[in-house]
Image 1 (spheres, rainbow, N blue to C red):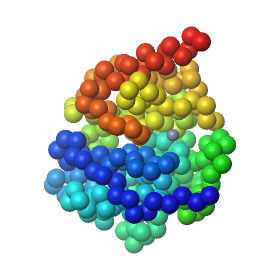
Image 2 (image 1 turned 45 degrees about the vertical axis):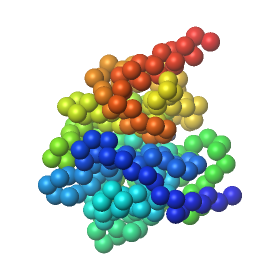
Image 3 (image 1 turned 90 degrees about the vertical axis):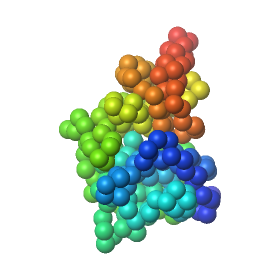
Amino acid sequence: MFFSGTDSEKRGKEVRANLFYFAENQMLDCNQYIIKDPTTGELALFDAGNAISLNGLFKGMEKCNLNPSNITKVFLTHEHVDHVLGLYPLVTLRRKNPLEIFAYGETANILSEGDETRIFPGNLGISAKMFGVEIIPLKVIDLINSKEILISSEYKFQIHYTPGHSIGSISYYDPDKKILIPGDLVFIGGSFGRYDFPGGSLHTLINSIKKVNDLDVKYLLPGHMGISDQANQQIAFSYKMIQSINFY
Ligand SMILES: [Zn+2]
């Protein structure tokens, strides 16, 4: 089995000034977010998608007047296939003008080591080859000692360690703009991340959702499905749903 869908455009939408959302549009892909620095024109990309979707992202970006060659930084939420595989073709494309790649703790370690078995969790029955990708060790900047990172002249995100879906999962939170990029921790509609992959844990996931439930958030920008501008309500819903599971 090989995955295809190279040409399907990932449709973009400006969520608020200089913050764009590109919706996943194929199997095993993820939502991606881009922040444009209005002074330098540089672009920061959140999550890399599944590699096959990279051309689709570029097409979507061009429609939003964003030039893919202006991407200078990639920030990852966690180490899973659908969020990181796009790094490999991107790094190859940008050999002469390397990007900075940021990830936290174990995610940074896994990518630095090129540990394919931990990028493809459990028995999904898929491999990098099916996506036309070869996993190689990457140069990654570990966010483990960063409390806060400046993304652009407008956006500054705190780093919150929120494991449970995976061991290296983080949430990016801008307390000023009230934005949360939680990866696969919580989704809209009361959903939350899977906790049955290696390194996952229901108990840990509940604690992590509790942590983001205490934040003041307006924009919920998760790794899959839709986005919301009623984040606190959505997170509270997911928190309620996951606690109900716990009592079975
Ligand atoms: Zn995941």
